[in-house]
Length: 107
Image (cartoon, rainbow, N blue to C red; front, top):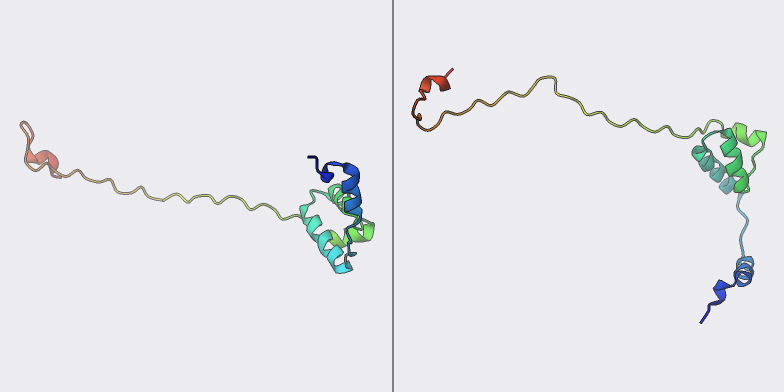
């Protein structure tokens, strides 16, 4: 059985019936600052603000200029040890094998 939500006209009527409260100026300002942090450059910022229905005039852009996008932090470089770890010395066998003397195992 088909649903009423499949009909675009029904969806449009339902969307228009939703009561939206207008945003407060402080909410608009916060949204503009957050958007400025996401923008790549001034042109991108103007496009984003316009798409969101926020003011994008010269005064608004000047106010948002001190909010550049955060720069990515460089990845942490692992530190290398300055000295090589000591090489383990081989332990002598429990008893010498044929042709081997204890002298080769001592220093």
